[in-house]
Image 1 (cartoon, protein in one colour):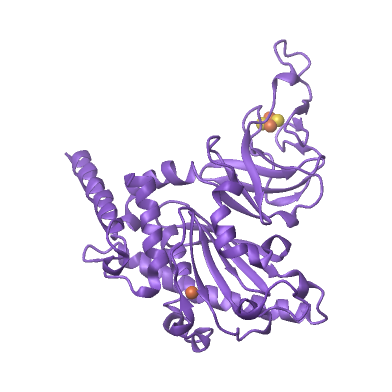
Image 2 (cartoon, protein in one colour; image 1 turned 30 degrees about the vertical axis):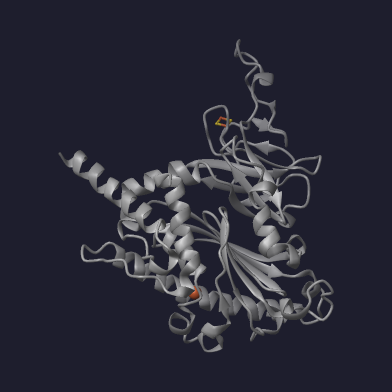
Length: 383
Ligand code: FES
Ligand SMILES: [Fe+2]
């Protein structure tokens, strides 16, 4: 009986998501509370979204040399993204083929991948090169061992990986995002200055949606960036199947938010226009003419989100004499804003768990949130 009730509740939830997604934007509601708090719904997301989609790992310029690597788990699947001797970025299973120890941790450089347990040793192409004390094991042949691969591709400086061998190529998948939003910024030349990992106590979608709208700036960020924000300077045009975005079209209150005098490719108002992007499911980028910052999100259960948080400069600012001070000031501000967001999104998560929780109508400033709901409905309710 319990199982039947759960299945019916899940059906209702998916149905409500689909109904909302089919409305005109002007009539749409926020997503129903259960999508943020249901264990069963998370199971759908894991299978239909995180096991299937391209997921961002971070910036390619942070692993420039052969053997530079970064570890990245897709849900419970440990992967390592590593640059080969041929300069290609590849993704391998980060699980030893002997007795399944994790191989590498964090980030670094490894000319060989040596298992910390019994020292089986792999090359940068995932091939087993050596295994100590295995010469008396009759059936063992190191040539039979090759670390399984995931797919890794680089788009405009971002490394993405997927477990889905049938996913379209990343260039094709994100072509519209490039044409509509990012190409003009030459994002591939931006340079990362910091990268951290965190876990917050909220559902992953609440943090994603928080990033998709600048409606909350004047209130939640009243102590930091709020006073500089003006609703009339925010535009929310329609996005595409793989992304949503909005623009902030004003002069930035931070000097580095505007194009550097040496920036010769941005013209007119583009020199002061910031794009706020979500490449689905959870790669969130604030892209200004002078700097960028980003989050890469994955669920760790219903009520926790794993966050990669990074940022850096457009190339013209990297060589500016004041670059160090500007980088420090930017990081201080972003940390303060992020902390305000953490409090905000953890608050929302607690709200979504209430039996009396209801989802209200969206503002005209929340079109990206509406489109995010449509994206989830396409993936989960197949509408
Ligand atoms: S588990 Fe890796 S060498 Fe034994
Ligand atoms: Fe915010």
